Amino acid sequence: MTSTALRMHFHPASYNARRALAVAFHVEAPVEVVLCDLMAGAQGAAPFRALNPNGLVPVLEDGDFVLWESMAIAQYLAEKHPSPVWPADARVRADITRWQAWDLAHFGRAADVLLFENRLRGMFGLGAPNEVAVAQAEAAFTRHAQVLDNQLSSRTYVLGDTLSLADFALAGTFGSATYAGAPVAGFAHVARWYDLVRALPAWERAARA
Ligand SMILES: N[C@@H](CCC(=O)N[C@@H](CS)C(=O)NCC(=O)O)C(=O)O
Figure (spheres, rainbow, N blue to C red):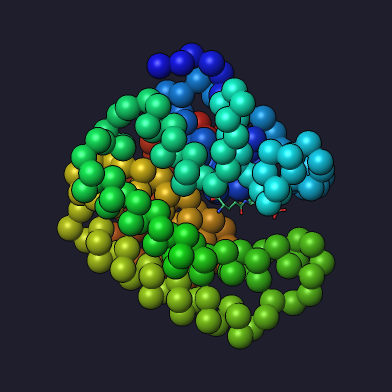
């Protein structure tokens, strides 16, 4: 195991970055947090674009290896620092990846629309929310949250009794959705689970970073 310090480009308002940093803390990766000042536009500057041409956080630097996309970062860190959140079993890994993919394709997408319409538009002077887009995203979010709530109705964590990268993935989105004013009420199992994940020392530490 290498002991080279990793660099995580991060912004405290980003739940995608929080998810990746929480995993880093949880698996005890030696990570240095580097602020990318999104409010000042640092993500658009050439040095950052050279790391991530998408201009988004998080980005992980491990020596000359540069990785963007929070789910990929989480898997990479957990692979390098073995722990129960990313066990070797192929089926468990596929199950985790399933939920990460579902988040990116469905759950998180609905939450992102609401984040843009309800929060970012106002923040950046982009006009009033598009009511049609909000209604569609709320309906999609509700449908997807129900899937998660059903999954958690008989499990402590998303996969079962054991915390995994799936929990970090989905808790990041749920946190962002809550901030975005998504219809998060009425999903009792999700609420119980989210409180559990938020109380993890690694999550709390990432939330304070
Ligand atoms: N799918 C990416 C999404 C990353 C992303 O959207 N990051 C946002 C913050 S949550 C960002 O950097 N936004 C800056 C911008 O849009 O200019 C991931 O999971 O890492």
